[in-house]
Image 1 (cartoon, protein in one colour):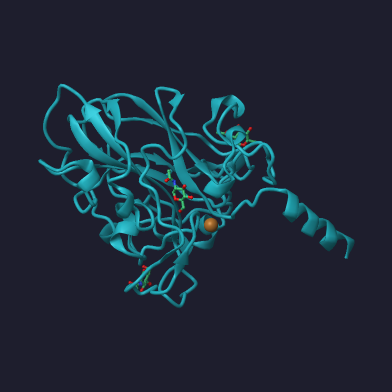
Image 2 (cartoon, rainbow, N blue to C red):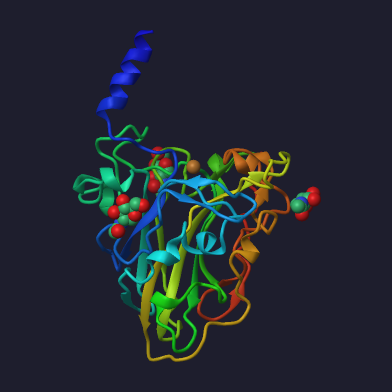
Length: 312
Ligand SMILES: *[C@@H]1O[C@H](CO)[C@@H](O)[C@H](O)[C@H]1NC(C)=O
Ligand SMILES: *[C@@H]1O[C@H](CO)[C@@H](O)[C@H](O)[C@H]1NC(C)=O
Ligand SMILES: *[C@@H]1O[C@H](CO)[C@@H](O)[C@H](O)[C@H]1NC(C)=O
Ligand SMILES: [Cu+2]
C-alpha cells in the first residue's frame, strides 16, 4: 500500500512520459535545429477513419500501424494536413544528419530536454523517470530506417503527399550482445536506456531538388500471434521537408519502395520471431531489414544482417 501511495505522488510530480515516442529533431553537420522545426507535425488526437483499424484514436506519440491511412504511414498521423505550415530545411548533398526523438508530449517540452544533453545529443530527459536518465531511451527495439522521396517535377515539397518512390539511405540494425549468437541487440534501442545515435549522410550524389526525408523505427510484431486486426507492428514515422543543393541534377535511382504498399503488415521485415520482437533473443534465420534496397550514392544494395558469432 505504501508503494501505491508513493507511486501516485510520483505521478503527480513528474512530467508525464508516454511509453511511445516521436522523432522530432534534426541536426545538420552537428548543429541541432529547434525541436519540431522542419518536421511535418501530426494531428493529435486523430481518429483513423475508413481503414481496417477504423476508430483507432492516436495521441501524439502513439504508434502508427501499417493498416492506417497512407498519409499516416508515410509521414506520421495525418501529417499531410501540416505540410503547408512546415518550413523547408536547406542542406547540401553530403551533409551529415542526426535525428533525435522524445517520449515527452509537446505540452510538457522544456529547454533542458533539448539543450545541454549528454554528449551533444539532441534530446534527453533530465527530470524524468527514464531508467537511464538523463538519456532519452527508446520504448521499443527494432531497426531504424531513413528514406528519401524526391518531389515530382514542378511540385513544392509542401504540396507533395509522398505517393512516389522512397529510396532507403540508412539502416541502423542489430548486433550481438557479448558475442552471443542467441542474444541480439538493436543498436538504436541498445537495451540499456542509453540509445544508439542515428547519424548518417545524405549521399553526395543526391540530385538537387526538394525531398521528404523519412525516419522510422519499426517494432515488428511476432508471427505467432494473429491479432484481431491483422498485425500490430508499430511504426514511428516522421518526415522532414528538405531542399537538397547540389550541382548534380536528375532523379534518384529506380528500385525504391512505395509507402504504405511495401511497409505492409506482412512485408519484408515487418513480422519476426519472438527473439527479435523482444529485442534480446535469437534472430530469425531468414530475416531481412524492412524498407527495400539501400542507396549509397552509387549502387542499390541489400543491407545484410550481421553473421551470428560462432558458438564457443
Ligand atoms: C504539433 O502538434 C501538437 C499536438 O498534436 C501540438 O501540441 C504542437 O504544438 C504542434 N507543434 C507545432 C510545431 O505546431
Ligand atoms: C549502449 O549501452 C552501453 C551500456 O550502457 C553504453 O556503454 C553504450 O555507450 C551504449 N551505446 C551507445 C551507442 O550509446
Ligand atoms: C504472413 O506471412 C506468414 C509467414 O510467411 C504467413 O504464414 C501468413 O499466412 C501471411 N499472412 C498474410 C495475411 O498474408
Ligand atoms: Cu510504443
